[in-house]
Image (spheres, one colour):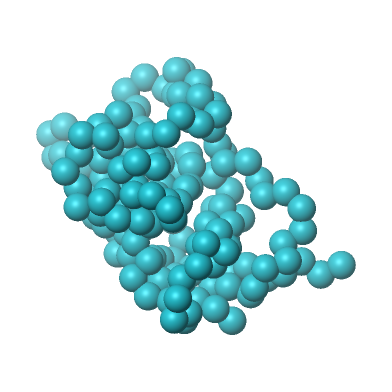
Length: 158
C-alpha cells in the first residue's frame, strides 16, 4: 500500500485574500481545504469549522490554483449567502512524505480522491466511476481539523 503524509499548516487564509497573501506555502504545490467558519474577533480564533471543498495544485502553485474560477466555487458562494457572520477560509497542506520516490500526477490525484471520498465535502462532486487506482493511505498531520487523521482508499471490486 502506498502512503502519503500531508502536513497542514496552522495558519489559515481568508479565501478572498489568497491572491495577495504572503503565506509561504502558497508558492509551492500541495493540497487545500476550503472551510466555512466564524471568527471570534476577541480571541482571534476561527470556530464552527465546516469543510466545504478539497482541492490540489500539482502543475502550478497553490497561489495560482486556488483562486481560479470553478463551478464549485459558485456553488460554495451560493451556500454562504444564508450564513451571516460566516466566512470562507483556506487551509494549506503539503505532502511532506510518501512511500514513493517520485510523486506523480496520478499519485497526487489518488491522494485527492482519498481525501474527498473520506471527508465528503459538500461542494466537491463525488468521484464518478469505479476507482481502479492503487491502495492508498493518507495521514494528516499538523493542524488538520476538521479533517480526520487518516483515510484509506482501495480499488473497487467488481
